[in-house]
Length: 194
Image (spheres, rainbow, N blue to C red):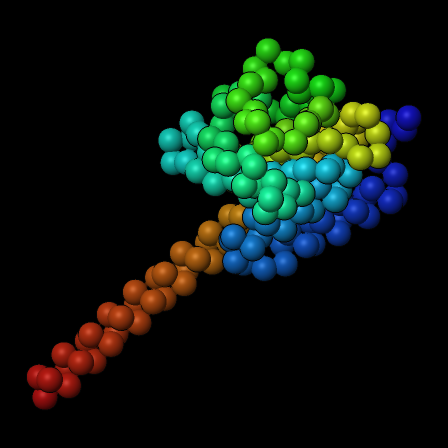
């Protein structure tokens, strides 16, 4: 097996980075990040878990590969315990050949699909963990490779920059609306005073 990413993998990473940065709507961007990660490493399932303000649990869980029936069978979305919690507690890539064999593997509800291979990578925004990418069930091999991990780490770095840009854009929009309201209030006041 090759120890470096080939031209095809690098092109896929570039395409994923471009897709991730192709808009400023944060919810749509998070979905694109999860979809791009799944495609990049041939995962059957993927998710992007967004951490809450305390950085101790998941506030959002965006999935790829699970249809509505599967979501209903699974029930409540995860909050960041078990394997998912490992990345919350220690923000570094985690690759497992069979997540079921790990000591922290628990909490799978009865309707949850069987998952074996696992790759988790944190997404950092300005050196702070924003969330994690979780990928399972590599379809083109038994396990995720070193190259897969490096590709997803690269995608996560680009995602962090794109997320920060989307957040800044949203903040600028909020400030603009606030300034517009203040200007309108001043104009109304001036009109009433005259």
